[in-house]
Image 1 (cartoon, rainbow over the protein chains, first blue to last red):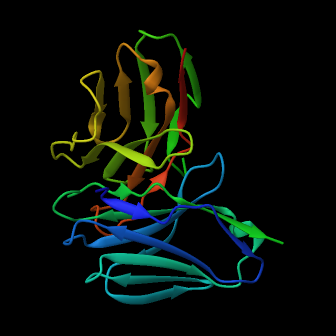
Image 2 (cartoon, each protein chain N blue to C red; image 1 turned 90 degrees about the horizontal axis):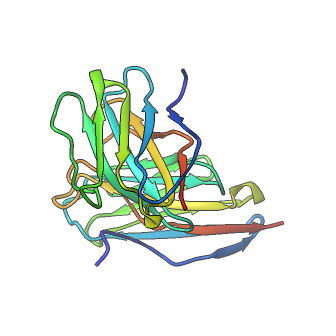
Length: 113
Length: 115
């Protein structure tokens, strides 16, 4: 079982819709959860971090964490073509990962004008 | 500089040669990470340095790979006797503090091609 798994893409949504990106992790004691955005040919950049159960909102982005289900998601409201990128879920602080940040393989999102 | 700096940006080498990749983290950042990303794939952890602690080398794929960090700042990733499967983008990242709540800032990467 992979340590961090993301729903396979690509995901395509129309402009203005809500994009929902999902991630599960295997290490139950993981403590920190991040979403990174990576444009084609560029390096990842952090867009959201979440550490406790529940929702965290930042502008059009909402991260949701459910530690009991070992599940973290990212919602993008009012999706824009500029949101088209690969979104990487990252987890650390567990027994397996310890100090390192483990990334999923990413979900490619395309927002169609 | 303002961000993480990596050099070279591109490196083409012949199979069997050794290569050195350099990373200059953001000033004051105590943590430094190396990841590898193959085309269309996620980020594969290689090694992590935190301050003066022993590095976490658990992600290095073979003994041909090694890394050091001098003076708590610049890091060099060395790949000996390169193989074609080593071809990838090598990303360096740094963070201000501990790994649990400090975001990673990535450099632009070094694209390594082994012919």
